[in-house]
Image 1 (tube, helix red, strand yellow):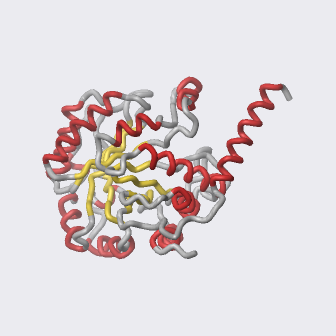
Image 2: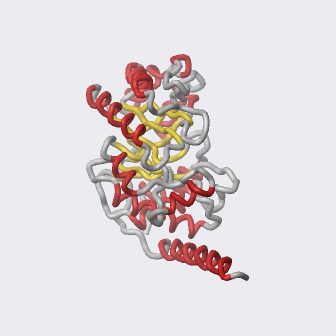
Image 3: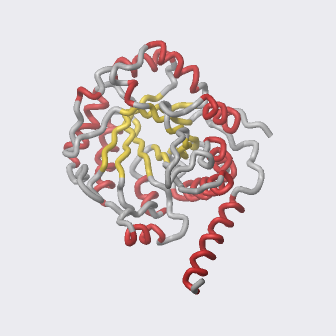
Length: 319
């Protein structure tokens, strides 16, 4: 082996060892739901495929822990506009959910691929994007959940969109929420991805703070780690949760995403990235912050075992 190869192997082993160490220990008994959790819901809820019986089953399934539902309502067109034909049953759904459980907050999940790495949404089209958010609020939603990807760390146009969106949601007494990438585990490592692949996987903690200052709620998409073992994934989630807790102000709701889906590919190993492993990592980092919870991704892929892991690990954790 060359010295360079030995150095790379040593770095990989060192990183894996650090994640394994993160997974050690016993979570605090206070690390549990604050009834502020969330679920990403698929498009079937607003396009007519779901009915009253489905709403009743959903409310029963989510129980007392879930407060926010992110309902897929887009995507936006690349010019920033939103096709009304995408969500013909939105008003019905919000009404039904509020009647079934007045405490539930129903948000329009609006996303698109942005043009940072190819064709896509131009974030400088702020007027049209905000118009689409206004359109969704007019349909009755309690808030806007933004999921634009990939937004590169430091993107100023994205911050401008958030500033304008927050003015709108504040005026409408609605909530502004955003999905965000993971935080770089080592300062500067996001630049490596930018140079080697053109896709910087992580955000800096400083940029996450800039984003969090402009919204009411942040959901970290803490999955697709590429890690092959549950212990390493749990340790990684512990690290991501700790970094997020340090970067997002206490006044902002912070959610850590749980991988309730079962794809197997280069970036996601279903045997390692489980709901149970993610919850363990969250609990190991949880220090009792009030505005804190987890978010299940997603209802259309989650199994009975995923929901059981959520209840057993987070809603009513056993010693």
